[in-house]
Length: 420
Image 1 (spheres, rainbow, N blue to C red):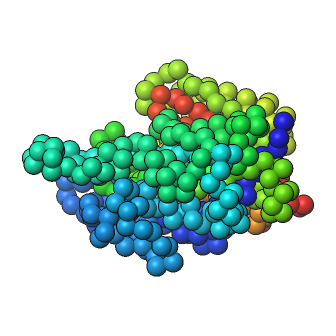
Image 2 (tube, one colour; image 1 turned 180 degrees about the vertical axis):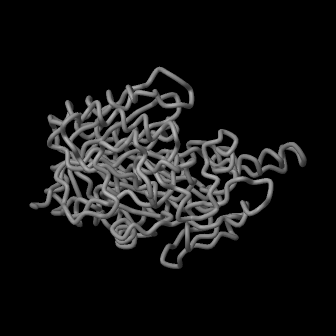
Image 3 (cartoon, rainbow, N blue to C red; image 1 turned 90 degrees about the vertical axis):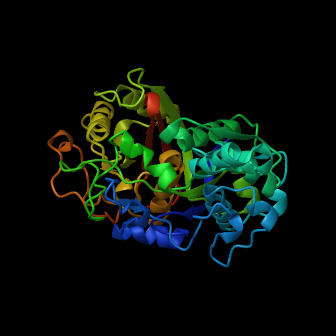
């Protein structure tokens, strides 16, 4: 079966809008949190968001949006986008440049695109209000394609003339990890030679605030304390948005084009908790099963894993559930475990591809990011090897975990391609 490699990355995130700045933030444990102005009201209990800098997409009119001048986006493309579409388009341009892809590499039947997004509640609400108040003929003809859950793949496939496989994935916070897994399958089965995997979220009030109703958002007003996975004092996650784009290619394409990949994708696994619509299985059964399936598919033993990028969102139940899953899988082995959500916040459907890309960056640059903001480790997690500071070690084998509502769990295994 063909081997699969990560050859390009693009980022619009709370900790940086390109690979060098993201790598620097990961290495230096520099977070992207700010007091979010729309949340600074007495009736809103959460205050902190992982904000996207250099972009302004608060208006319902895309012509009012602002973004870095290095990106050239035509008006007819902008008017069918949600804010997450703007972020993804810019990250896509980065990934194409990073992978050194020509237009002929992109617009052909052997290149596909899988995307993950919760859609745009911001624009859905706006267009629905116009429908109710002003009537259907006063609605934008682009309202649906700009707002529903498939908006990323609709827009990107059309804008970049993708002629291969395309699909949107919807498994909540496991969505873009599922997209990576199925893109990997398409490549190993010979269906495609190249896949773009995209995650994107608006990261604004409409996308984040509903989670306060679930009692899952942190109520901290200090950005340095709001997201602290594995800490005994954690009280919920911090929301964020943005986009990450990853280019996956077969070994044949890597050799034909003469590019240096970030890492090899060895395999993946998935499993469901079958337990609760919103709460992780208390023993982490589904997460453990996903990791074991991923390791088996990759022909990797637990003791060979150097680093696990945990899903850990900084919630009371979820972090402990994952810790128990890690204990089940690794037993006497002690890979480093950290959650980069301590720096970015939780990107929801974006999280899987964003954090897999973080792992690829760390593998190329030779470090393991620490788990930031821990003041007192939760006793339930004390037997894990959770580095509080970045380690200057190039991991050889990495596991990335993702989990979503309904107990959807995905694990992805990456291998270093650079000699230690």
